[in-house]
Image (cartoon, rainbow, N blue to C red; front, side, top):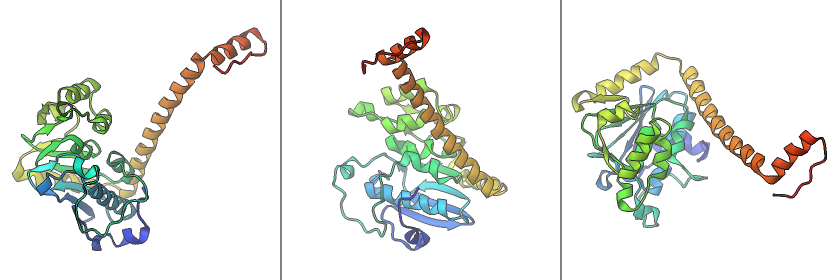
Length: 272
């Protein structure tokens, strides 16, 4: 995770953000989605600001956990399609464009710090990347959790991939196909939500989780999450390499090579 220069990162809390709020309290970085007038829809530069904050958290030893919350009654409505099509509008931010493409779905695995997503409002479409990527999701009862893309001629490709890492495949695919709202209790059963609570005590639940996290070694947690990130990547690579091996074996040259080995002769390659 090296999207921005270290000099800029060191002065993170002095930066001007257009789409998020950022603060650090008692070893916790609180990242607040701050675009309530647009239902916290993800603007391209908002993604840059989130990546900046996550790199700051990763590189700051004093930060031991991350809480992600949002202003307004919609936690996140997904991508701002107009903005991603080039209609970005005017905004004031001291955060530059990232040096490479930012994929929100990968940020959470790469930060190597515990992430708590605090959900007090509706979540739609790409907003689920904040839930699927977190280690803990504390959600108010009755919150709407919806994937309406298919009903709009789209499909939640990245969200599907993220959800498949924590939820049963058939449940995820059904959700994506039918574009329904998932009940919060079902979301907990399927592993997407870790804690269901009420508005008046959600902060108590989040703070209890943070207190528990702080009783453990921050170094052990960081190295453990780094290891999890690494082995997940290795599993993905091995799955791909196995497919390539099977493809090679199934080719004419592959079959010829095996036959020639058994018959103790030189193979006759055809390049097929």
